[in-house]
Amino acid sequence: MLYPLPEILTNPPRRRLGHQALVLNTDGAVLLVETTYKNGCTLPGGSAERNELPHLAARRHTETETGLVLPLRSILATDYVDAQLLPEGVNFVYWGGRLTRAQETTVARHRPPERIVALHWVHPADLADTMATDQHRRAAQALTALARGAHLPFLLRGIPAE
Image (cartoon, rainbow, N blue to C red; front, side):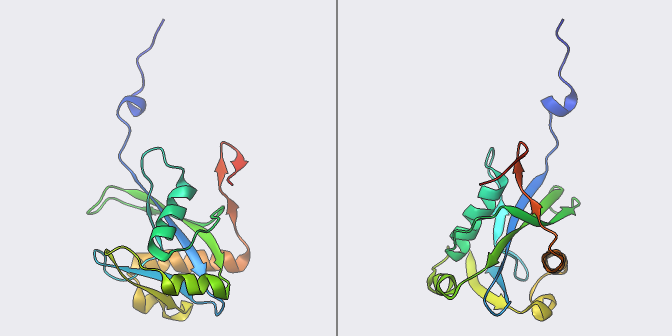
């Protein structure tokens, strides 16, 4: 006997999934993106496309915005955002690593899409002056997790992502 599918399967809820990368330079400054469509700077990243693996969405956005191709395999923070102007969402902050001087040069030479106004290196103490409050809180929590060594592996069906 066939049973009807539950409502959650036939009409799933709309939810945004955001994927960002926390990247530090050799001096400990955080890489931020200034866009034409948001107030304040954000960590590099964006939304996943349908059926796109989450860590690959973060990597794609980070590469497009900064020129960096980074292995984003651990999560530093997960942030739920309730529905306001946009549907509710969950944002994941991946550890992008501390860059080498050569990687910093890649960022300096990169020409991002027109929607990106500029890339900035901002010391953690100055993030509140540069980012919107919710973005700053998310970055600060990721930095705290990093300092404590609190990385969570990103898993794909129970196996660490490559």
